[in-house]
Length: 492
Image: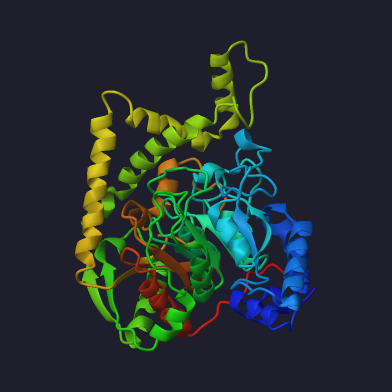
């Protein structure tokens, strides 16, 4: 096995593959060996497609040798896919018993675009059931561990995606972000997690949790790889009416062009730096801000006054939408069905009671309640009004700055079982990420250091609508001037 290949970035691997300096088969085999070596410790993968990955690699090698068609920007790059994204290959279970064994008849748009870019799909990774959670403890399949400390959670809901990238079992992973589910696990596992503007990436083939909040985004080891991936998966899709028809630049090329001339006004929201923020996290965030200041950034204080209402607003809206979206899982057409029911009502009741885990049931019940007659105006309608106020907070803040910077999560990764008995405490771990989804903004989490106990901390950059180019450039500027590497998780 060659550490040389599974330790490299997407841009390095694709360049070597395109130039015929390395066989894509050799690259894929080294990653499969890596998975075999470390995944028994972290359990990130739910499906490993060894034969399929090698088959893709051989086809790519033949294509390169023949030289008849252009080679894609992710040539030979191993990618893992979150269980919530539809693939014809393997199963799409959403880590739920109710979809155990379900095979999708089609690929999600993002999967099609990865394949067209000559990426190698290496398997699927674990998550919180139906993307509902912040620790990946809600999976019905297995428990995924944080590569930096096996006693800690990897974050959620895209915990398998973050863990697989952090442990270098793949180069890139696709996750989904409804309230921080790409950025928070990226922070916990010490990798980069990008949540694009709502509408920038097609949701066709993403199993819906909360349709007005869900967005697919990449996790990677560095900013440039996330930028390249966004250029591949982004853009208008006629099969998703919420996807927007806007120019999609080559982000990696634009970043390299802009990084030396960019001017920065960076906003620090005073509401993000309260006593609820872990002291070590705060210290590392402020150290990162000083690095940006040395690169010429003007630091200004901004206010997001409705932040305190974000968690309540989010959990009314997302549960309401989940209640509607998950009504389709009833045991009639596909998935798990309770077999000993006496009538159809009992079949519905038993199927959903046994098929959904506790957290999913909790959110369906909450969502059904806030949408019910007599409570709709008091809860759901009011939450939508507060959502508008939160969006206006960002609009006003962006009149004073170009990008907003703060912590991704109030704490580093926590231990298994630490918050499972207190759902509200678990929900508060997304306090800094939720507002971004409510406002449909782009944001990225970039590692900014390790705590004394050796756990990663993420720095969050929040940008203006559809201004991923600027957001990624600032994040890249920080990354290359961070002045330190944090090494790899202690998995050997």
